[in-house]
Image 1 (cartoon, helix red, strand yellow):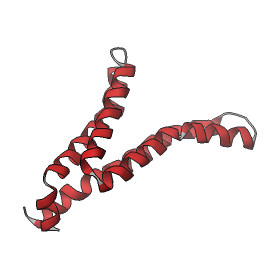
Image 2 (image 1 turned 45 degrees about the vertical axis):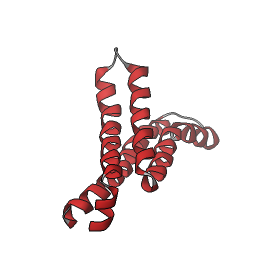
Image 3 (image 1 turned 90 degrees about the horizontal axis):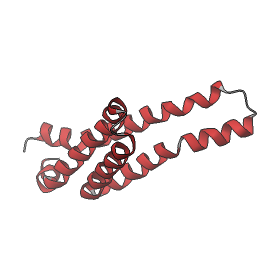
Amino acid sequence: MSRPAAVLLYWSPRVLGIAYAIFLSTFALDVFREMHGPQQTGLALGIHLIPTMVIVAMLAVGWRWEWIGGGLFALAAAAYAWRVLPGHVDWAAGIAGPLLLIAALFLVNGAARARVRAAL
């Protein structure tokens, strides 16, 4: 495996996972539109950021153990799709689709781990 391909394969699920966590956390910003006190707003923000914290935890696991991370991201995609389908195909594509992509990249990374590590 060439060095540029190994670098791309190693970093793509990690960078996409970070970008996905940032994307998901933007949905929590709607708590600032509501007129509540700072304590209630802080609590609502914390509750809205729970899915982002779960994604960050899965990313931390996947960073070290690609197979487990890939399985966790695939499980999260399946759980979300099971929850919203068949009614909201667009939601499933927008939320579960990137999770599946990250899962696939982690799994490919895990399968080629020895070659990736050797090329890095």
